[in-house]
Image (tube, rainbow, N blue to C red; front, side):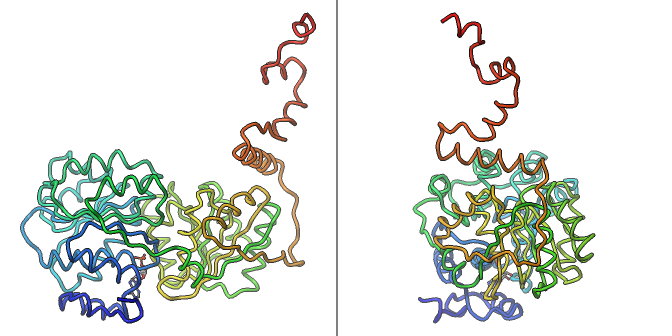
Length: 439
Ligand code: AMP
């Protein structure tokens, strides 16, 4: 069945689900849905390779709801594990939307708030649990969760789980579940280490895939500017705000510190319609920020990669990589926030000298050259701050060292030159002069 000819009717879902799909206005199933839904309904274990924005959540939620049908018994029958609170909530919202005409009971478990209310919800009985691994294990330890009825286990964003070091916890979760169950394993990317886990966690799985290349090539216009430093990036941002139609912009940075920096520059120099989210922000602040962004109250959201997971916002007009990610799959995740579900999107990257290496690697990953745009002449070029310069030099040295382990590094050389003779000998393991002379 090709995606063009497929319709939701082909899946033989029940009326409650068709009505919910209708209400949401989904016209036809997305590629991952066409590939995954029939296999999941047939009871196969499935490995799904699809990034956020492809409709992958509904690809597992729809068949799950179809199989569970209605509220039944006390103990949960399905478990979905996701890496972050935001993603847990996004999956939960999808279940509520698609399951609105069913009486299925779903409970969300995630950290950042006290466990009491969540434990109570589990104790009251439910059909589906959506959880981050740590909180799930906490609730299990509290003795309120009986996992023996769980017949469907879904791992969402498995590659992210691995990056965040969750795999030992997931193994512990799996030990609690019945051996005989359906396992669904979803991941945005499929490097070797993820593949290893995928086959460990599933039995004779069917692998379905929508390639990020298709997605990025078809829907998202990608470009980059070479920009010398942070302050010039701010000037460029200001210029773009004044000259482009930025209706809803997600700005990505690498660190919490820079998230705060970029946010305050934007607020002071560009627009007050901006919010920031990162892992140090209280959860309620993060949720409020996302909701304001979703509702259109604020048009700019600054985020790190971790917190951006699971922000399910329609029609993000622009994604700006204020800093290029050094985990290359994150580039695909980031730009997948625009061009979602058949909307066209624009992704712009600001590349400083220490990012050139990373952008080359990203181009290898997406198998595409990103269009370079010259910095407009109106942009005032700022001096690089000494601390930033040092960081860039160190980073470039690190990259050269990665490519050639014998490389000592310009930064290293410079440091060597500035040290006094004795200190230099000590720092670099040289023999003291007098000993050398004796030889
Ligand atoms: P996801 O990849 O699960 O993050 O989904 C991305 C967005 O696509 C969400 O806002 C979904 O509501 C939406 N979506 C999912 N399936 C479809 C579909 N078949 N047609 C249109 N939109 C969809």
